[in-house]
Image 1: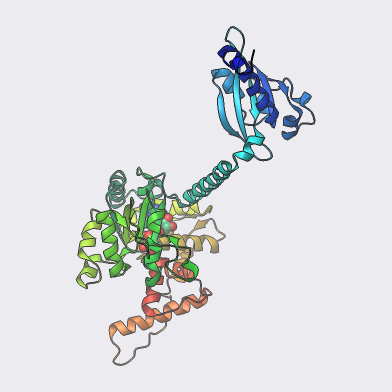
Image 2: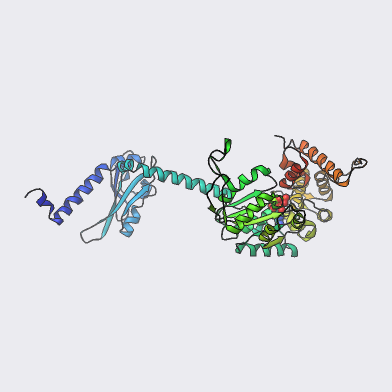
Length: 471
Ligand SMILES: Nc1ncnc2c1ncn2[C@@H]1O[C@H](COP(=O)(O)OP(=O)(O)OP(=O)(O)O)[C@@H](O)[C@H]1O
Ligand SMILES: [Mg+2]
């Protein structure tokens, strides 16, 4: 029979091809393993055994496949009777491309499975493999970024059962299920950021990023780049490579616009466009990016007054004011003091408790720094007192050290002739802030704590007063 004649008989060709296929795969295989119908190893080549840390293949015989090859799917192949033609298998060295096939007896019943590890094929697959690896890396880093960007507060963290607190929580919960903007209004330290995170966490966007941007903490000239990002090559220096803006990082998730009252007017216009058109352009690029973010804004300043002064756009205000939530100051929800104090002491892992006089004293303080200030007072009182039952004197001492605005023996304030009220106030604020910063070694967050102010509020004041941050 001439050569090509022998290729005309399909049944015969099929058998030849099967043999070739098997031989080629077996020869180029880095490893071969065969299991029985219980997925116990009945045969393994020496090379493959060594890859998994065995001295010889004999040590693998009779063992469950997964106990030798972690993550092996041969049991699945035996169970389902379906092959897994191409897959990746992790090994102690590099990952391998593997093929897993069921083995049938003459009657067609599955009696086991065979697995090939195609190491040599891997080299030819190397461009694909590189992509796979880089995608894996990207995935891992995105996952960890996302974890870092996920909200750490839930509604359960917002302590308070006073009528005012319950109303805040009710509105915030309602806000979570909507996708429209939420506007959180309230003094410093009242829990606006906590609520923003809780709303995100209870919203359908919870599995995506929660990204915050603080208009008061970032110098005005950097804010737009921070917001929209920059295109590669658009700028010299550090930004040459381009930078991803917060708006893009928040895609699919929630963008928290903290201290929105301090947003410069030009950026307000651009933000309005984002809210209306749902698109934006990174600085220095012509590319228009579709934006899908849910906006939660917060402010401790009076936006209506800012509109009156021409510092805040009225149209932006109406856009943001879809679901306003007024977060009450602590002095208007004194009923919450016992529960708040208990929760804070617990969170501080302190064993301390407050006696009745201490609680009564807490109820008489004005709490300009609200819950943040309460936290600082309790932390300080617990730190200073060996007695686990904190009394009024301990609280008084802690409040005293924390409120330089009303020091116990108040030093006389200098009165300069002809000085206006606002000039005097500025002078006092400057002295106070500079002195506190000096006491805290220039650390803004620590100074903010001592003053019972939010870090961003202090930054804002420093900017306004021209006090430089020392490094
Ligand atoms: N209802 C509450 N229950 C428990 N802890 C709270 C509550 N409200 C605020 N806190 C705590 O007080 C601190 C300040 O809260 P948060 O940062 O949310 O305030 P804020 O309103 O954003 O203040 P600022 O305007 O200064 O930025 C945080 O440590 C927060 O966990
Ligand atoms: Mg805040």
